[in-house]
Length: 230
Length: 231
Image (cartoon, rainbow over all chains, first blue to last red; front, side):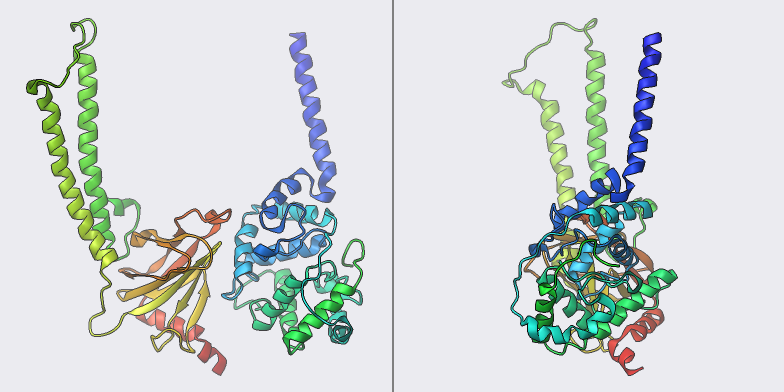
């Protein structure tokens, strides 16, 4: 009987220690974040560096506020629910697989904790010409493309060029940043949708495909900063 | 009977339910008869009442007659099942009926991992014109009106399934598959993918919204790109 009590006490202590450990881990999403991230790796790669064959961008090292915000946008249909956004439509069900806000935050935190994965240049573009086109981007994305949380503008540095091109094409075509479309959403989400709609407007500044390629070449020439985003 | 558990909302849903019920009744009859005989034999020939088991070689006709007659009756039942199934298959899958006095409405159904998108003809009733309405995860149709659909896939195999229509049609990349349906009651119902299509397969639902002619006209007017642009 004494041995039984000792075993029970040891098991109880072990469970308490495990719970405390899990609690302490929440900075990087903890075990739950790692577990949920396994779903992301199917398309975004094991290191979160993105996979072009799936048109899945690099997500490793993106700020938590941006990842969680985009997941909320996908979940609510403010992104990934446009006829011309096949990749977004693929992502939206994945966001719906996150059962709770806690899960959404955990996987976002884990994604943010991953190191940036270097992206190779794959598109032609003139960075010198693109530096002039980058002017209007500075207000939201920052001088070094580091991103700004208050404007919900993500870091651009560290992202692959093919994804930046695809995103710009979608903004220009209205497949991203299509606004609320009459839906009723919480103010925070509505604000993000409005900012995305603003980005769709800014994308029209780049009139030609070559201008987009040039500005992307300039973004790729910028040095990534640690942390990403303000 | 199936309608008791799952609503039927298309002109051919009842026919398909009939085939399923016919199969269930015939197979059910033989199943319970076989199991009943099996247990009766176990009971009737239990060790305490029976002599030593006898091995039948099949050379004599008399012991085989119970098996032969049963097989013949099963074959007769099969004829009924095949007759009913082929008739419904022909009506639903082989025939592409035309609407009385004109062409039916055509909608485009596009499947992809893991979403459905649709192209509806606008007020002109013709696809590939400026007033086409494109939507994601929501198909709007009119009740009591014949529709043809053009089903395609952007990537892998999917299956366009509308349970209340009893409709299930595979979508095959590179092919446009045509079919038809005619809704018999208004409401909003599930569209599902019925073919495993990747990790997000279970998260690929959409809705079919069946509207009265007035409701549908109002929806068309409210979503027509040409009318929206004119505002």
